[in-house]
Image 1 (cartoon, rainbow, N blue to C red):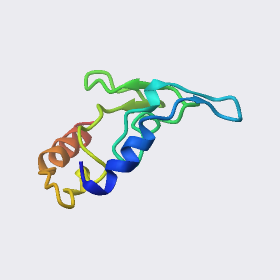
Image 2 (image 1 turned 60 degrees about the vertical axis):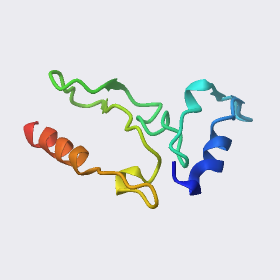
Image 3 (image 1 turned 90 degrees about the horizontal axis):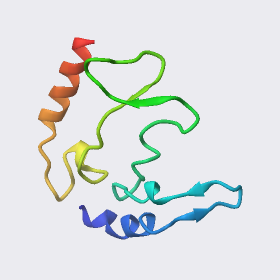
Image 4 (image 1 turned 90 degrees about the vertical axis):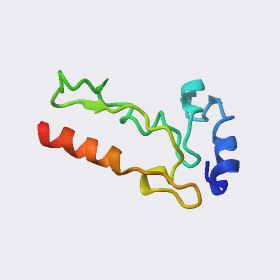
Length: 99
């Protein structure tokens, strides 16, 4: 993980409980990329969603892709930790073109 995100990742990854508005923040909210928790990045909580299935792309709901293993800067190629993301983008564009 980029050094810039280590402390924020630890802070995000330790908060559970109930908000003043009564919303329960469970352990599913702890996994994060150093800046954003991955649970909230999947789909809006109030909208229907399903895990992405290339053989059954459903219209009108969020088709959630697998979580990319990396920190917040990984998809931009990184800052000090270099990530080769070209294959990921080529794969995504191929998937989009096939729809």
